[in-house]
Image (cartoon, rainbow, N blue to C red; front, top):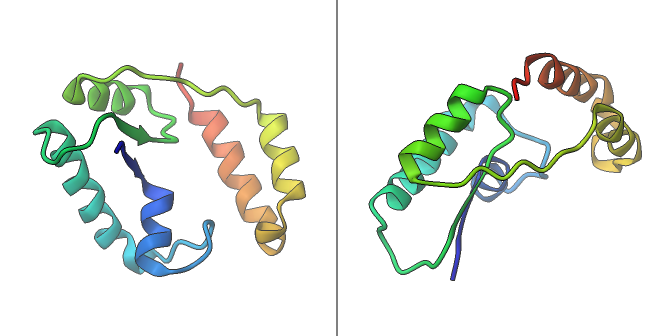
Length: 114
């Protein structure tokens, strides 16, 4: 009975593609559904129990602003850059796009603000 809002899962649901394949053309649609669900949480629309917003944002301001708007508690699931790279090396779904994903990981750790 919980509601889970996750951009990755929304991309999968809307596109029918694998987890790491996110066509740019669908971003406005995914953001629209995401924003609608966030509004549902803000207004407590529906009969769900707990809301979980899964967010990989490196920007502390955006994380804290959303948490404030929702009256939410931030839970940080720590993972080192080395562990992210290790998981990428083992991930068969991303084997043809590893360089691209290494760049994403590097960028996240460069931009992350605790």
